[in-house]
Image (cartoon, rainbow, N blue to C red; front, side, top):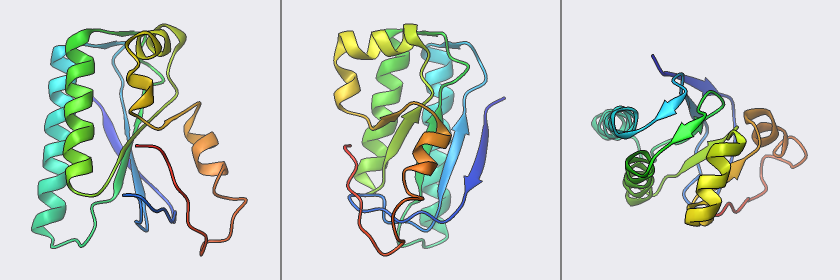
Length: 141
């Protein structure tokens, strides 16, 4: 089962101005319609829970795709739907740790231009260690 974990103190701009970011680690090697629907349901629940708690801002989600070796068009569609939901709430959905076959699919379909994609969770976290907390960062959506 996929898990959501918390990362510590990050400060962003452009839909990422949150005190924290959470990670969804995908555990299946295949990201198809079923896995995509599960992710979309998690994102919808995430947004609903934050809205019910009267959160001013929805914390960003990072999808760790380290275990995913295959993605199909239905999986891509659900991923895009998840991104649109997060952006509608002035938040963001970021991707990291894509395997080469998955990265190729993103590049061929040009969907890589719609997401902020990082080589790993550590790369994502480390890029903010070099800047003071008061700085503003801009990440592509």
